[in-house]
Image (cartoon, rainbow, N blue to C red):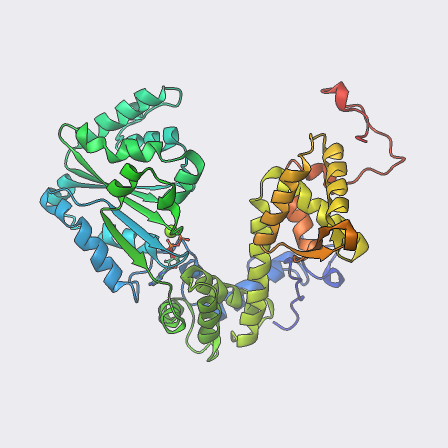
Length: 459
Ligand SMILES: Nc1ncnc2c1ncn2[C@@H]1O[C@H](COP(=O)(O)OP(=O)(O)OP(=O)(O)O)[C@@H](O)[C@H]1O
Ligand SMILES: [Mg+2]
């Protein structure tokens, strides 16, 4: 195993081990791969993984549904108590579930759903529909998705193109045809309200007055404790009939959660004492987020594999934490609005060049220049000032107010992200992709036949 080429963080073999005569694609990566080939590297990775893992590593991923949820027994019971009337054919109260990210809200509701008795009389009375409003965030797509969840054949599905009223009527008919009680879970409901307001929640919350045979009960899940402030008073009081708040996990609770998963996935003895405590302690400091704790454990194992280590040590957790923080920054950049990305790009470029705090005026000039290169109309300085505040609140830049004597006060801007990783993340946006290969000043500009107006270099 020691003869295996070391591989870089990006997973590529070290150049010194490139073998020009390496086997052609199609060569079996199984036993007996040629020395120095990708096949040999893959073999080695397989062997090392096998040393650390006994179970499928997917067990450490978010999508895995664990068989039990330690420290959420009380919340499972609370949710079940609210929804229990549906099992007997009565209408449960609407329910709002709050809690910070990674506190087990989605997992608990999924657990309650799977615990509903599978007897046919119960199944006839209760239908569970779950929609994640992070993906389905317009009234049209929401009503269509709900309606389509009842479709048993293609012709029952609501096609795109119908008017909103017609979609709503079709959804109502589908619920009525099904009969019994529909428990509609709107996960990340705050995203729906932020994107589309509360009109569709008003529609859904008064649906019981329009249904002939069936009833509907709404369960909203949110990690934004303030989101009901944005609701119309009637919608708020209808949704808020029952409310359950999930507290963040503390470090010992996160340890229990991680121990359960670790026992399922790792071979005995590969986890150094202290690994689980460290993952749990880091995650407890950051909002008590179980998702973060699991990601740290998974990445720590990956770091150990990269080191070809036989055990996962606290040092791997430290490395994993650094990687995770970087990933979070990069992910955060990807979700910025387009002009905010252009602004951040301008800041990063200027800061990289100057290596000192930047004046807001210079930042604005650099931003305008970039928009011109990209063929975009620049936003007004006031909007850019708001975006600067947003970038600061996200922790991507630091802005310090400095007094300039009689010249008044200005903001000086410094960068708080790793520039080499952040710039490619911004260039991933097709809008900024053109910046990935800056044109040399004396480079010939090829004619753009599709759009003759855009043939010349932007000023
Ligand atoms: N008590 C627990 N035991 C085992 N795993 C848990 C527990 N709580 C959460 N998890 C796991 O942590 C991850 C995050 O949990 P979940 O998605 O339920 O959080 P959430 O509160 O819905 O977060 P968000 O607000 O971001 O949607 C999931 O992989 C889930 O399986
Ligand atoms: Mg969730």
